[in-house]
Structures are given as structure tokens and as C-alpha cells.
Length: 316
Image 1 (cartoon, helix red, strand yellow):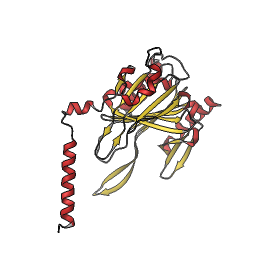
Image 2 (cartoon, one colour):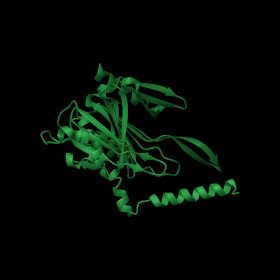
Image 3 (tube, helix red, strand yellow):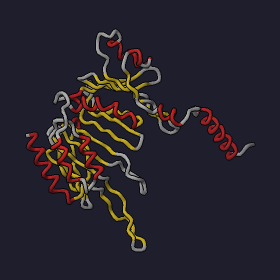
Image 4 (cartoon, one colour):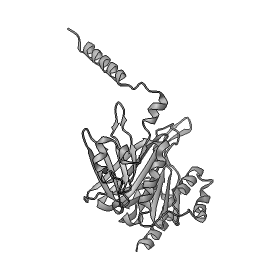
């Protein structure tokens, strides 16, 4: 009789052969294109499973909504379902493909608590969090290749400009408020400038360098571990914008970033808590008990206190 080891070896060989058989015979460029998000510009271009949602636009009497398809990532260990996101003006709808149908999350624009955009090299994610049309707290994330991230800009603007109106040119004097970061962190100076919309006024901005702590000393050399990545916190007259580097493993380059856009009208509480090890945590309380936390060094207390003071004056 075959031993357990032989049976395991045979099973692994079968699994390996099955996996190879399923690999697509595509070039690297063709495989990369499969991860690109795509605009859907008409009812005819909608894939069959999603068509029932777009029936009201079939006849062409209503303008077809701005719609983007986020592709399916079907890796060996991880699978992300295909999704459509549609901007209907007063609400953002996200459709997720199932086996035979689709599920829909409808976020009224005034019910969205915050939007998070993150990118690491060519891998990007766009997340909407808030309260659905049914009054249920929910979040949905779309994943796509970063070369197509521009397709999500109009949807992000719809959400960020919900209470403002049409987009305006960005005031150069507001961009100039980040000039002092040029020597501290040129990359984050540009991140901050890029995050502003026209008409926004920067009321206070904090740049927190990466927080590190000594972990081990060997032959007089100290090795450090990262506690929290570099972070910029920008308070405007409309929103709180928080920009972070993505967390990384030791030795990895500092690629990527995370942008959180939080409307001021959705911030229930904004407070500062002390943590051990000379750390402070800025807590952002959101609807339905949700919250976000961001770490700072204790040396940033004065700047954060000023940010809290300005926020209090805005919301009183």
C-alpha cells in the first residue's frame, strides 16, 4: 500500500498540474490589462449580469450615469469579485458580482462618512464607508491597477463636493501653505497639494515624520522598528484630510500612500488620547460608532491642540 507520504506527493502533483492548466496563455502586458478598471459608457456596454440595474437608462431617455468597472482579481490564494460603481449624483451605487446575480450597496452622498484611496505601486484600492440607503453602516472596496486610478477622480469629486457645487480652480495661496514642508518631506508636500480641491481653505496642517523606536543594538549599531508611518493631517474649512505612507516590512522601500477624506459634517468627535511610549492618538468619531485613529509623537501635542481648537470653532 502506498504510504501517506506517497499519497500526499501524488495529490500535490495533481494540484500543481491543475494549477498550471488554468494559467492563462497571455503575455505579461495582456495579463496586466486584465487588472485595469474600465469606463462603462452605455447600456449596451454593461455586462449581462448587471443589466437589470441599468434598465431605467436603456431607452436613452435618461443620461447614462458615470460608471466604472473594477475587474476581478482571481489569484491562487485571494479572490476579489468584479464590481461596478455608478455615480447617480445624489447617491453612489456599488454592484458586486455573485455567482448568478449581483448585490448592490447604495450610499446616499450625504450618508458617506469618508472615502479612502490607497495605492502601492500598481495596486490601488478605493473604499467608501458610510450609511446605506437602508440605514445600515457599510463599507465597500474596489481594487484595480493604479494606471487607471484617474477613472475614480470624478466619483471622488462628486462625494467631496456634495455640499459645495461645481469644482473651482485651486487657489495658489492655499497650495503655498505647504511650502514649509519642502525640506522636511518633499513627497508629502506634493501629496498635500494634490489633495486640495478648488475653493478649499487650509486652516491647519501637521506633518508627522515616521515614528520609530530602537529595537536592538549590536556592536554599537542600533536597529529600529517602525511604529507608525509618516503622516500629514490637514484641516480645511470642508474636511479633514489624512495622508499616510503605507506600512512596510523591514528593508522595503517607501512606496505608496493612503488618503482619507473625511467631511467635517460627519465628524461627531475629534479628540486626543495619550498612549504609552510618548505617543498620542488622534481619534476621529464617525456616525454609527465608527472611528479612525492616527498616531503622533508627544512633541506634536501643541499643533494637535491648535487643530482641535480650530475644529471646535468651525463646528460650534
